[in-house]
Length: 611
Image (cartoon, rainbow, N blue to C red; front, top):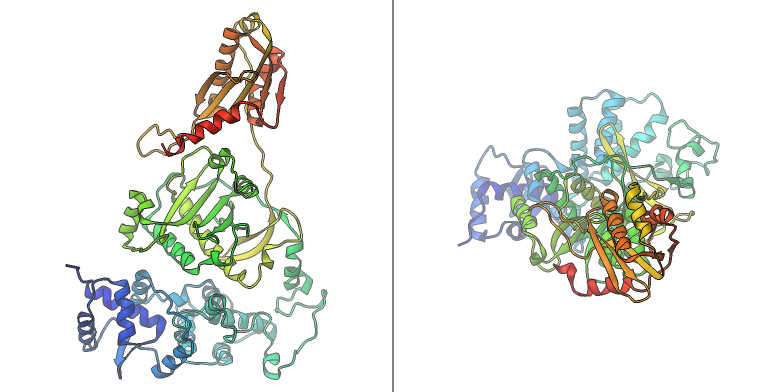
């Protein structure tokens, strides 16, 4: 028998729905609550609402009135319903349990948005209001807006209680009010904001409030109140600066590209995410999945998101256009971008190396059976439920040479931001992808965070990825006795060796619960005969490259020094160059070795990757 949800949770969720939607009839209200709270019968639900309606001092902000359940601030429920019916193509905005709980605790989501916080701070800073007074003023304005107040009346509502020292201060403040209104959930839009509706559902008849600069005279007369602004004229935004030094700079942004700054050290390496961090990530992933950005974004529509904590840039790739894999790959730094571009250059015949050199954090949507027990444990602890194919969020970290693994706390926070910003950029690209294009080659749109009094705001910037500086190890023989012994073994005039270093196609886990790694293999092959002379395995060439050199010189002592050595990679060339100089062996880097690639292909064809 299915256990019924507790009454408090039911009423809290009803309260949250009516906060966002304003008014609902019983059938629609029950349908949405039952979708969220499984096992709830209609009779039981109706009885709970009936009992709650008899309580005089209820903690919830809804009431029953003439066959309708409405939020206590709704003045005309029938008008709200009529306006909602005019927008039948717009679905109800999904409401989470957490949002509903916060509404019950009087922590209204309409006050969370950065645009609202910015207006709040301005009322405190410019006019000396307390934080609570500013919040009450904004919340009252939002309620009046929801009850049908016209936009200009909303502006006047704020202006009437403020004293400005000059008219130049009025315009920037009006723009703050407009931004707040554009980002306020509205009952007639079924909980969405005007900005949400225009971006998601292309309701062009629903106009946003005027964008900066907003000219009151233009609104009243229908004519432009001022001519085109010259570069040296005062900026119309009211900043007091010249146009070319203020808003006019935006026109030049795409033509000026800077080099991406170096990233700082990551915090919380290896630390598990907190429950709140997981909650935020799953909410961002669910919103991203529901937006279905892959329906108009291609996997080569690349853009960056900069991490506020470290300055690291994640180059985002949205996957799903072909309907095979739905995911967001956030490729970290120039190294991650390079691995992504290499995959895109040859998508139909990928080099095995690309599997081991990816550097990214990824959010993908999988089937339930594809999840590990650790994934399911987090979902269960959060009380989340997913159903259907390709609906279950999965988060993984990819690092060069390491097995794909569970993300840590920093990766969790950054991936949350990447999902949010990826959705924002994608929605802007729905009608045009012009923002992804720059006048300069090798330059990408990057969403850059700015901390303004504890509030993170985001801006577009066009940055060139930082150059990749690769470091290689080179090892020489310092044991003079061993060096003489090698030379004494003689040199074979016919022997040509191929030597290559690459990742082994099988992971190694040294300790339980520790992230597995892919060892490095060094193969030595006689190029003339294809005979494998030997191979050595190390964990890391930088730290253990001397073992490879020792193994190679042992072979030379046993079977004479080759007349020539061929290599394919920079890494292998640098590892051997000092040794070859000491032994006077010609070392040649070729585009492709003759024998070793076939050996590698055979290793991979044995499905060693599935071990």
